[in-house]
Image 1 (cartoon, chains in turn blue, brown):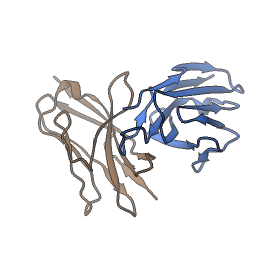
Image 2 (cartoon, helix red, strand yellow; image 1 turned 90 degrees about the vertical axis):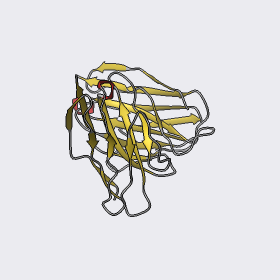
Image 3 (cartoon, rainbow over the protein chains, first blue to last red; image 1 turned 30 degrees about the vertical axis):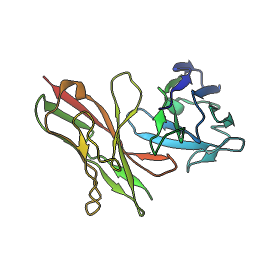
Image 4 (cartoon, each protein chain N blue to C red; image 1 turned 135 degrees about the horizontal axis):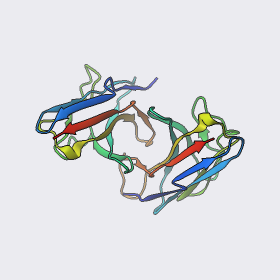
Length: 116
Length: 108
């Protein structure tokens, strides 16, 4: 299984500022994803982080608001830009396609973001 | 479009009672279904997947393509089963569509 470290685990931010969340995996993985879980809601996929190229965003999410980087096969960042209280959510990194893996996706512990 | 429906937001049972968490899906292709569980203050983790047809912690789930369902069952619930359960629909690309989740509480 893949071990995923997400930083920070939580943060309280002022509206209008930006926060960058890091996701580090202990082994090389094919796929990395970012999900959002708004209060009382399910997990919604934001985008697929592509190594060495622009991320692939799901409907309703745009690069200007959620820029994503993936410089290599073990690391990705998600930035939540120009934050508003509506961005208060848990943001989760997910990975799949590691060595020996089948179709299981693994998750980080999440970053709990509160925008005030 | 892919969709996963978990009709029960909350489910409360007594210890030793049977439990069934419902999940229905909508998918035009051949689905891969999963159940993920999140215990208090822990990360989301895979409980079981329909492909492997296994039983984990006494839980089983059978894919019923006719009813487009993948209900999670356990004959005798334990207090440590109390958690949030998510049904998810995915494919070989590891991308998942989640249901809204069911919070299971097992009372002593």
